[in-house]
Length: 150
Image 1: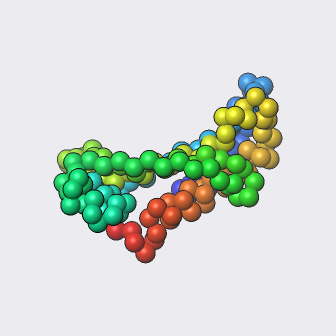
Image 2: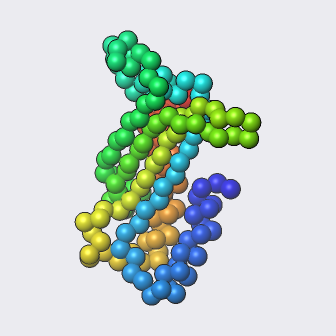
Image 3: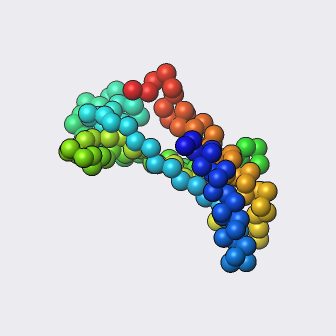
């Protein structure tokens, strides 16, 4: 199932849940974690994000590597969001043995500063979650352009 399809299917359940609790939706957030196998994930991340001079020292033999970035932008021309992207190394605990991976975690959320005054409508909630999937993909492409992915 594609991410956009998942959000389309679960949004009505979110509406039902909110109706049942008679709740006000004041903040929206979506997170995704993706990973890809890589035999040397720390070296891959260091060489991907750092200038050559840093690869000789101190990043010549990293055991692990992590880079976090935060920015704000207007998602789908409509929703002011915080965008957090965390790039890090990890291990995939597969059925045979653990294998090294690169993990990219993304978080798109509306500002906490608006929580006291904001109330998202059903239409806004649905629109937000339909905008999130392409928003995640667009942001991922900024960090890892498709022609540079390994």
